[in-house]
Length: 418
Image (spheres, helix red, strand yellow):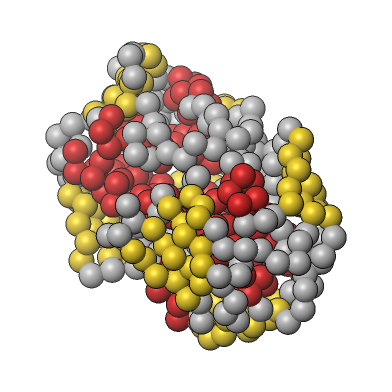
């Protein structure tokens, strides 16, 4: 089995370029299905999730091939509207093909999705949105089918929760619907804005992305475009925490600081120096960190995707920290793994109390999910001795060349077993 071996105690210095955002590139790849001509998504990281979604597109008869660092998607001939279980089970984001397929072809059949086991992430909000647009939803054994026998029609839709996936899927369906759609209480993440920008470049009419109301005027046809995806704010946040924990000075390039505000604010609270420029940040850490309380919330609140990394950091901070998880009910699976390092953490429901310790000790741990895997690597970088991280496939789903980038700035990590 592939694993990462991490040797702790190395201070970090140098420069890291942040890759395109996983959580932006995946819906944009799906949205390219709605075009009638090819799209080129530029500088796409070859993450496992990206490769999986490319496989899903090929199952639909769509061309999805890399040309250097660019992913060329040719949706001119869709030969199937069914995404099979063998691909969808590997990644929840595969469900995002339903919106554009339904809009363009009038029907879609998708196996029930998989992904990280971090709690219940029901797709009911996606389906309610499709129904409001005029689709008929059929629940089968292990699949969902949606049909728009009379086409999709604009509607007023209110989301009970600002779900990122539901917001994306509904937008992709509504851009080709007949008439005007108003989507209230949508997700406001930067990745939503990026998807809207991509669709608008294709000829869509989406207004208000990033606010509490999105308005969409349906159009008859979309064309393919060339597009560069925004930087990955979670990847950037992970490296910022790495510097905070290990100490040193690192500049992160290809960063949009305005997307980092919740993470940057908390890092400054714990004693890290963060200097921002237009498209880069300089992170310095030269002292023991202070305890801080965090509470995950939908954007622009503190991101749930940074909770595990922060918990690893707070494990060695001075004092008692509180970590409250409000987005996913099962996102504390990394606690047991952090305890193997000697971390002192008490969980009560959705709140974890983290009692900072002076030192962590190397341990054999596993990546219980994508972000938890990153947290294990970060903990290993400050632990005494060696740490072995198993279940590395979770990390490979969302971090572009993590080992290479960390080693370039002074980390000592190697991949073994494959």
